[in-house]
Length: 63
Image 1: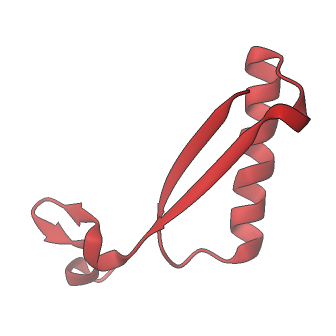
Image 2 (image 1 turned 120 degrees about the horizontal axis):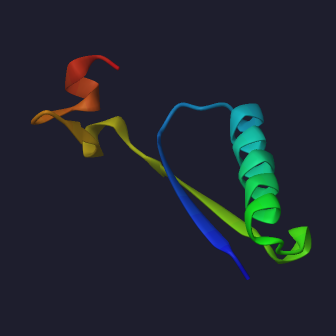
């Protein structure tokens, strides 16, 4: 059972997250031949204050 963990900075729409789940599922199915019903995708949304780039939070960078 393939299990994909995707980390995203908060702020994506439900539609965008659905698209990620669909495309990651399709990619795993194509790459390893796993049945779609056995593939799991977990999106972990990280607050902008808890994601750092170059020593600053994403929130501080205005992203």
